[in-house]
Image 1: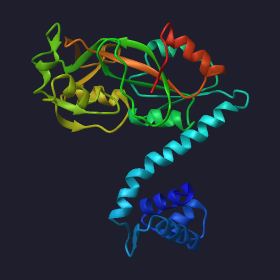
Image 2 (image 1 turned 120 degrees about the vertical axis):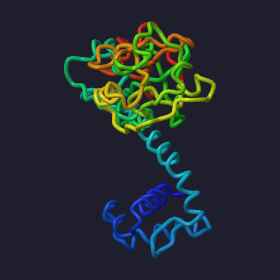
Image 3 (image 1 turned 180 degrees about the vertical axis):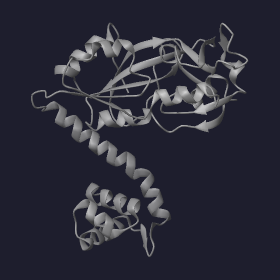
Image 4 (image 1 turned 90 degrees about the vertical axis):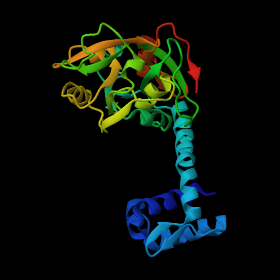
Length: 293
């Protein structure tokens, strides 16, 4: 399957327009139509209806495959390019909001760093495709257990930090005066569903045997101060690393001590590191050994 034709098909399906896809891709509309026809002939099935422009059943199935296929191709290109890198011009680091702990901040070079905060699920793909040299991902785990990352490309990770977790509650919450909490004590509370900022509810639910943690409000952003303000205002609870939950006005951070869980941060990279990326990785990884994912 020609990846150029596949990319054209994905663009037409996303925009629901041959003409809009032609403008975005820099082709003529006739060329786009010819590429779609060639792909349909190759696969032996119609992929798009024309009026309106929409995927057929076969086209929907192809879209399910297209994203991972194109991502893998981009990752392969980036991996080869990394082996023939020009002299270093700086460092791009992508991170989840709560992964940028004090130890990472202290290790950042004084100049030449571009820092981007992304949704957790976007970080491995950004590293795999060369949009960033390094990534920081985080999540809930048992002590010393590695995180489970999506299989987007051959990547390596270092564990760079673990810290206790705390539930962030409004100061007026009935449980706010507790010295510690069990995760099960909170299963029936109202929660903020903030998968890209707080620790995802799916991870809490899995740690609690698959039950509880009903969302009351969904927050799709990556700003940690917005999330903590929502929790302090009583819109729902959130679970955060202790350093992020402490000192929030109008809220109380109560340690969650059972089951034994930690907030774990891992450094993600592809290929072999050099220059500023290698120095930062060495500074934050300590004695950890890399693993491949």
